Image (cartoon, rainbow, N blue to C red):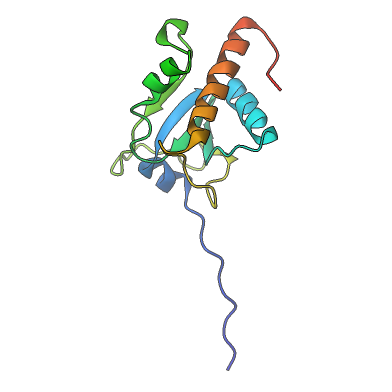
Length: 143
């Protein structure tokens, strides 16, 4: 009797990760620039979804609440009016991105969400804020 081949673990769907994750959102152009910069520098970002013209960086639950204060601490205060938003996890929220409205910029499988203990969260926020400011000023993305 032969055993069936082992099955690969099923990657979580975008909807499942969306419900269980806090998120930081930014316009798609600056988000892609920040992702490229962080990857070139060898820093992780965790899963990232694209919805229309915005990207959502999925974070561990509880990580979104301090983001405005972290941005201020990094020197990117609210007076700059950067288009960076946050959202908290809502496991029961029926409004989740479907396969026709969202796709992965960075897949969720094998990439744990960033949390408040991760230095990569600060790097992500700084890279996102810098990319948003550069776009606003008409400057090329940072390398």
